[in-house]
Amino acid sequence: MKPTTNVKQLLKSKAEGQPVTLMGWVRTNRGNKHVRFLAVNDGSCQASIQVVAETQGIDAELLKRATTGSCVGIQGVLVPSQGQGQAVEIKAQELRVLGDADPEEYPLQKKGHSMEFLREIAHLRPRTNTFGAIFRIRHALSFAIHKYFNDNGFCYVHTPIITGSDAEGAGAMFRVSTLDAAKPPMRPDGHVDFSQDFFGKETNLTVSGQLEAELAAMGLGLVYTFGPTFRAENSNTPRHLAEFWMIEPEMAFYDIHDNMDLAEDFLKYLVLYALENCADDLEFLGQMYDKELLDRLHFVVENPFRRITYTEAVEILLASGQKFEYPVAWGNDLQAEHERYLVEKHFQCPVTVTGYPKGIKAFYMKLNEDGRTVRAMDVLFPKIGEIIGGSQREEDLETLRGRVAEMGIPEKDMWWYLDTRRWGTCPHSGFGLGFERLVMFITGMANIRDVIPFPRTPKNAEF
RNA sequence: UCCUCCUUAGCUCAGUUGGUUAGAGCACAUGACUGUUAAUCAUGGGGUCCUUGGUUCAAGUCCAAGAGGGGGAGCCA
Image (cartoon, rainbow, N blue to C red; front, side):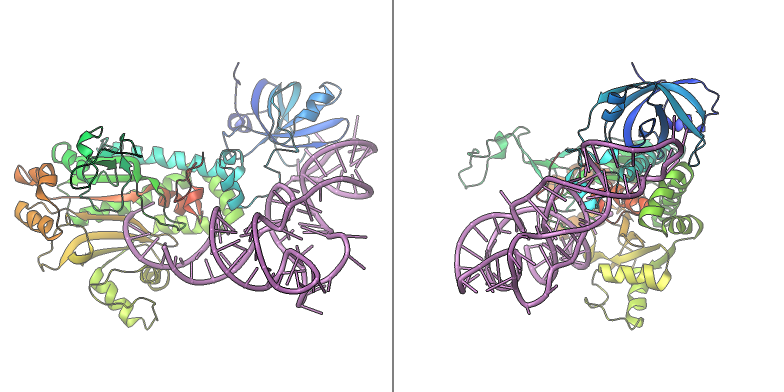
């Protein structure tokens, strides 16, 4: 038997004494010998509903078992509340304890917990107000991403999780193998013989779906991917995960300016979607963790992103008089401290930087007429830094082959990618958005491990 | 991977110059209270002071190594 309703619906309902069956988890159980008040939450929304149980009608032993964390089923009627804090409440007629939670053992309390502690009990985090809010927002944003692209004529393509190419060069990869790790077959030259492995070659988990998305865009026009991505980097920061979700649109016939327009419109749409559809959860997070959260979100929606070139960025940094740990010089990559200065001090708004030196960017980015910069774009956000990285792609076969050679990538590994430029090539662009970084920005969470249910980081794959 | 800080009750934390029996709030248990709002009040139980080794008459406190965690950096999304 399942509940006839949920808390979200009930709180919007007119209380007319209508019968309800509700199931959920007890947050608090307070009152006295004669009447008990249970705050019951079922995850349908931020708020709990108050269940009033008079001990005359409800077995005292059952009420005693309805402790914080226990799961209960209530049959009763929805009535206007006699108390102050809420408009409606359930007058219980029957209470069932579906699952006890021994209060001596149950780790979650009514009081606040540290994020670090909750991370250690990630299997129980969904039962907290904070993680309820975060995961509902995460869901809403996932949905909004698909809605945005669908409404704008994009086609969702599923790029492979297991890849035989490591040409993307986006970082260290996780090997996928069925070989015996203790004694793998060896070649005479002392290397592991991957020809005997499951796929007959060395394979890894994907670090990006971009190259395959480009193949799809060359026939479908506008495409996007949204899937898990894996990086075996030993990154220990509040902004990195070994397993994260990435959105990668790829658009035929888009130049770098169209790309920037799309990135900005897309981000604003997602922030606005959260503001309009997750108001209660954002309100809660703003109240509890970050008083300026809602102001910051509104600011992003309402103001244009600043657009500058890498060269202009370097000039601004050099003229700033600011002391930086890493020297600013044309040709060096922008460091976190430089990006933070541009976004948080100089412009005080999101910034899109284009035209990076080719030496610090990937081989597939389109070379500018100057021969020394490429049509890369990074969108930099306050607090979290680079949220989007993208570019117009090099569509000219010979130029691309030159870049591939420069980077020391064997052409035979890239034959299928190069083929797109061989036949019917066209200008095209795309970018990658780190989903968890977006969720961080919108929820105001400071650590990326708190916006994904079960974070994978170096030395941690629990749950 | 580098730098830095932290680890004491279920949780959050205090613990003086190394010195008797390691404390508080919350949580929990018991009791009181007929409408509570993270209820309130009273009483009570609760400790591998992260681990190992060392210095010392004496270590939660000092030293070393290790483990785990936080922050910063790099790599990146």
